[in-house]
Length: 432
Image (cartoon, rainbow, N blue to C red; front, side, top):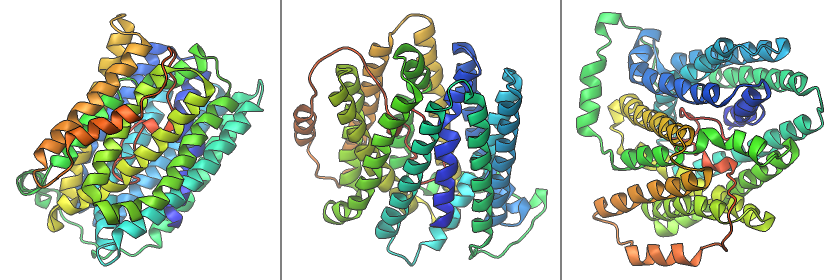
């Protein structure tokens, strides 16, 4: 619980504002595209090597701690960039590559570790409580960082120095919390020749169920068609200041935190699969609401809706993935699943950037396309889950009932970047 809260503080004050930091340094669309895609590729690819790294380091706990320390070092590099005011793309890209690569390397080990720690607990209740606490910590950290940036005036870079310093301390403290948590798997270091990655990965691929993982992969592609360009769109196109930016985003974080409190009760009555279906339907609907109006009331509704439905998706998907993972191949399963999701995010970001740069689609059209691409994999998932009784007619009725009044200007919210595998996935920060 403590480690999750400290991790959320790091996300709220630093990771969530990496896009805004790049904009503040003066990086243009081309640089922003590189900063939002190459770290994704590195973070996704390294996860395939996570089981081997886990074996070489002597256990999943050591790999997780090493990854957290790598993120701590990357935050120190970001702090140095902010302190010097460097506009070097190479320096910023290297720091972000280190951050996402470290996070990607530790993700499968963390998920496998969490799976064994919670095997004798009531997982739905525990994850509802843990996620709610994380969102509360994220809300406080994100809101405080936004207020600090708003009041920084001409000293925005100095404010980023303080924020990255806070994130550094929080991540370092979370390392201490990780070290204090027991690992039920005894440390065992093996030689490189003994670390058989391919056979175990092949076995995990053959023995695991990938329906939910495939859905999350397709959902990530649809989400990231527009996600990398949300921050510059809000800060430049809509001319929002940091106070408005943080206030709107904090609304979705608060809605998400409150929704987690009810996810356990709802899932207990309806089941995880059905709750995932309704959450996925809301996720597909949310961009349509953004594209309908720039009215403040509609924007607040979009943020609240986005926070609630993403809470449902995150809460259910992680537990369903745990159930689908073979007990002796959990790390390999999450390596494959996380890599699939990361590559889908990369493909979506590149496709969205290409459409915008070539004038194929406007922001408004890109948001509508993102909504469509999010909805299609949900239909496929419902059709593939033969045991489900959720009728598509009922799903359509919910969509129709939640339609928002028409208008033209879209705005996106923080909750649009899901943390689909609990706390440890590779994706751009929820800075939108």
